[in-house]
Image (cartoon, rainbow, N blue to C red; front, side):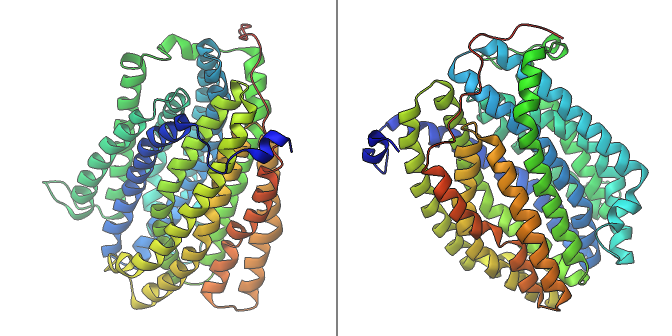
Length: 465
């Protein structure tokens, strides 16, 4: 560590950092909150139909989780590379990167739609053996799978806008989607506004239509409202051989890391699904509270990632070291506050699910208690490993770290606990244990400052192919 790094203040004196963090974090956090609310609306309204319906939608939603993680890997590659080129104001290369990323994202959405449309029973059966849960999950999945292509396209375009510090549009898109989704959920689940009462299928139709609206809104903004990239439909027909190689080289570890994490989440569902529908319903409730708590932190972490990519891309290494120290302290504080808040609101939050059984509510209380502790670690390590290390250019480290923890710690410990007949909350705690353990890795990695790597090319790549 250099003398400059050793003497740098714990809180950077560069006011630009705080202004940028706030300006980017607020709209991203609000977008995440609204996106969460879309899924929460499905979950909460369906809860009135009973545990099996909640569990069925939850299990059907696991494929959406897988899609989000895989699509998120492509979006992450767009953000990491484009944000660094944005630091150099090279918009020509950013356009090529966005085009390449959008192609990959659409391929993912199309393939997953085909699999789920052709074999929904098999897919839901991977998570649970409960016949009623499978039946409700299949009803949900058969319809909602057609939203995947729209979701992938929307998220790729939002990532493009974020990379050039246009975060507000994502918030607007999600807000419109929320209004459409809640209106249609209420109408199609319960038969209001002259619409048929379709129950679980109604929730799926509402989600599909809200995704279509999202795509139309973001597409309209990108092509007619944006003044930074000025993308046109023809730009998505263009590509670049060198940047495609860069995208694959740096994007694969991001995609791989997200796929590993999606396997972890699906493994969570498979393991908890071996218990009973009350545990599954409780996990659905607890994970919704976890997502609610995570959205603000994730918004801030995403903002840190954009700032990091831009700063490293511009070659301001010493300034980035200051930012890294400030980030660690900020997110440790955010973690403590968020964990305390979870402990305070868990009871009233669970009470919102009036349709679940007392047994499911009891499990949910235990799971939320676990989350109030692990959230402290989540806030610190996620911001450090994703906001700093990955966006700073050391993408492979995050992928390797996640792989080791998921397959070496999380899933094995939970399976062992399950086989030994441990209480459900112990199994759940094993599934969340990495959130604390990763902190020890993060604090060492960040303060070595060996993760800052400029991924841009000196000249804009121009070879099309």
